[in-house]
Image (tube, rainbow, N blue to C red; front, side, top):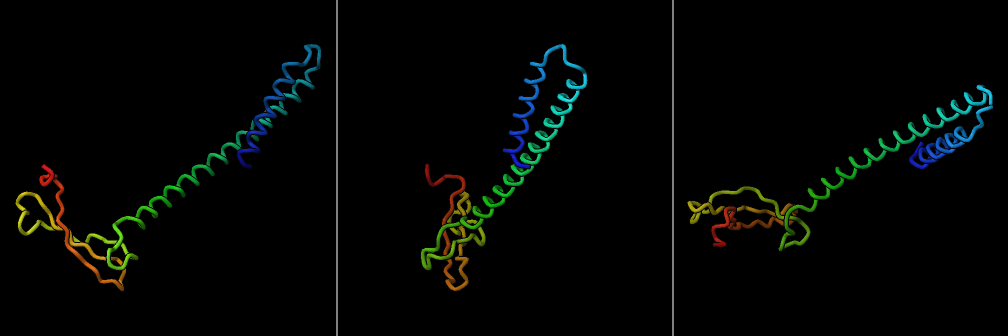
Length: 132
């Protein structure tokens, strides 16, 4: 069952409940019990359908989260300025040869495209000392 079926069953349950409330006090117990059983069956159908819909939503949420993770991984890193097809990935980070004592780092980057072979070094300031 899907969400639409669950909502339809819940609507049917409410309709049956309304009919039970409208029943005249003079009806026999058999008719009353039959309506109660019909209401109970409809409520169980609604519950089952809504539980299935909830599970489907949870599965879709997990699938969306996984796809977002994969998309972030695939698009992380700056595009290579040489080939334009690969992304620059950080290979290592070391203290800068001249300014390492001040916390400045040197990032070694390379293009992930195996045909490109581009690599470069960049100054990195994690402490923000150069912005002062």
